[in-house]
Amino acid sequence: MRGARIHSDPAAALPGDAVGIRDGAIVALGPWAELRAGVGATTRVLDVQGRTVTPAFIDSHTHFHRGAVLRYSFLDFESLAPAGIDDLLGHVAARASTSADGDWIQGDSLSASRLADGRLPDRHELDRASPAHPVVLRGIGKHVVAANTRALAAAGIDRDTPDPAGGRIERDEAGEPTGVLHETAKLRLDQSHRETVVPAPSAADRQAALRAAYRDLHAVGIATIHEIIRLPEEADDHAVLRAAGDLGVRVRLFYRVHESPLSLDWLERLGIRRGLGDDWFKVLGVKVSVDGFCIFRNAAVETPYKGDPDNRGLLRIESASLDDLVARANTQGLQVAVHAVGPRAVDLALDAFERAGPAIAGPHRVEHAYLDMDAPRLARMRDLGLVWSVQPAFLDAYRREWADAFEPERVGSMMPLRTAAAIGLPIQFNSDFPCAPFDPLGGIRLAVERSRDGSPSGDPQVLSIAEAWRAYTTTPADVAGDDRLGRIAIGARADLIVLDGDPFGAERDLAGVTVHATMVDGSVVHAPAGWEG
Image 1 (cartoon, rainbow, N blue to C red):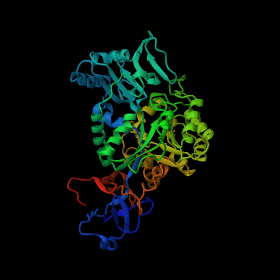
Image 2 (image 1 turned 180 degrees about the horizontal axis):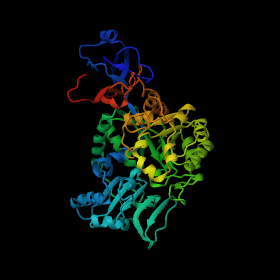
Image 3 (image 1 turned 120 degrees about the vertical axis):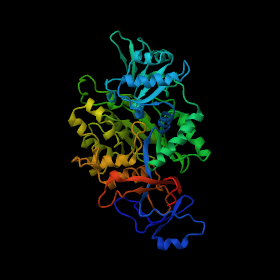
Image 4 (image 1 turned 90 degrees about the vertical axis):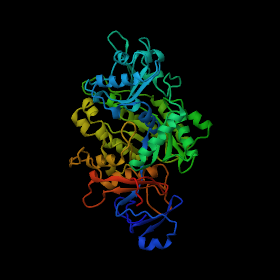
């Protein structure tokens, strides 16, 4: 590759304009005038014509398998964007009209705040749209579902079903379930429940969805994902594609060991430990969720939600159980990623990490933790050697939901990135796909500008471009122990992106920067048609 402005560290360009690659690794860096002497007659030379080249992005928190299957198999309300419940019901009815009686109608990425009605559909409305089919529509992040009467009956959920710990069944004035189920109250309508009644797509359909979604990752410059899985077949599908040579990105696995068929005992019996695998496909650790999602008013907060004085969210695991899981996983040499959105959940997580002692195999991670986070909590995270794993895309994706749930001053204090960076807390960025689109450039822009339109926001919590870029490249690589990823250096793997526009130049116009081409392990996997450099 020649004619490049090469940035390994975004704060400074590397000298020279050429990168030499052999067998998927970077073997030479420097001026083209010096490197060209080592180019053989069969060597492919890509001239990037003055474009900027950086390490490819790492999305360090995804539910990629589930999101891929959603995108290509179910009703995706993120892309369908129904204006209101009537519009949503029209999509359900249309899918039902092409489905055999009794087939399940499934959807995902619903949000009450994005519907003009300000609520999710109830079972009676879904019954009218699809009387001959069980219907289950999942909210963003799968923290809530809306189900019709057939689905509730199939799962055995009725007026006599009690609210489980960490969950809530919405009920009408007569005490009957409305069909809206929060967190653990999804029960057998949760596909990860051991006795779920919701059918799963076939292996062939799942793997086809993954192949297509890998290409979507390439288009935005992502070469590695940290994949959080609930079911063994999710890891198996990636492994099958790895064996077939069709694994389009590097996959790092976190097994969910709470509210999941998987368990630490199962991992231990199989000998699954951190680092098991290879450069393409390996294990990092486990994931545990403490609370719910704030857009459904389920995050565990100290100050109640706006207009809801009795609601301080839900805790989905008891402190003693969390302590046990974190300590055992640490002893087994696994990294631990804890989902904690609200401050009550964050405190439980930090207590568990403190009791577990120093990390044995790489730093542990707190996922989300963007709501009502004060400087002492951030400093405690730093002092415990933790990594803040956060989603800048949420600053745009959930503006409406946050405005509905919180007062303006609480919305304005979301995600205090500058405070964390200033005290030296390591930060890594990710999408939490399908909770938000995987769009690293968009996430970087929001972290740097904290505005939708690119205008100066005056927000004191902005990061520099270099800080935000590292949070999507070098930092997640280092957190995962991938010292040959997230950087451009001799011996590093050739996971690179070629950019149209220069994010590090004098103008630093992030809005004009796009991914021109993506290279994974030295192979061009995304580029304009006919592009040869």
